[in-house]
Image (cartoon, rainbow, N blue to C red; front, side):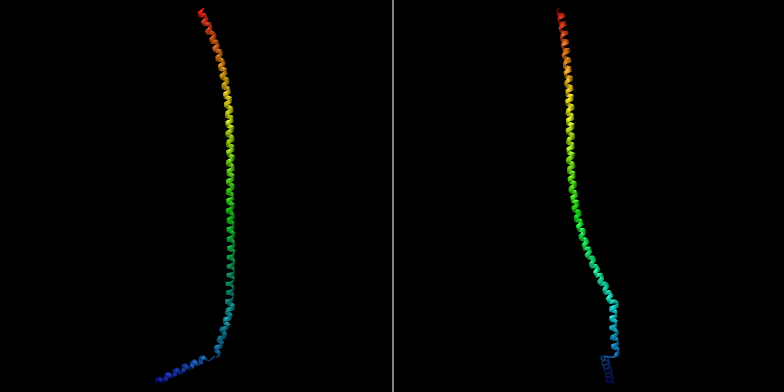
Length: 160
């Protein structure tokens, strides 16, 4: 009895396999629906999504190339600014050196004028002193002549 029931099951199983192997209308309809659904999904969702992805990639590439260009321009501007700064520093050093030289000249001129004025004043004072000395020598000479005459007259009076 068991063998009969097992045989039944095998027979039913084989019938199911045979039935499953045959192509029937339900399978074809499901296949058609699947293909239509796939095409519909492709046109409604996949293609617009891929279009957006592609546009995003292109925009990203464009932004990246713009960023590279801007970076290069910024580096060029930085180098130019550095060069201008170097030139400005050199120009400032030249100006400072010229100002120092000019200040040195002015200082030397002032010192020369002051020395000349001092010498002129010194000569003037020396001349005044020499004149005063001559005057005093003359006065002294006169006074000594007077004193000598007085002394001579007193000695002569005392002797006589």
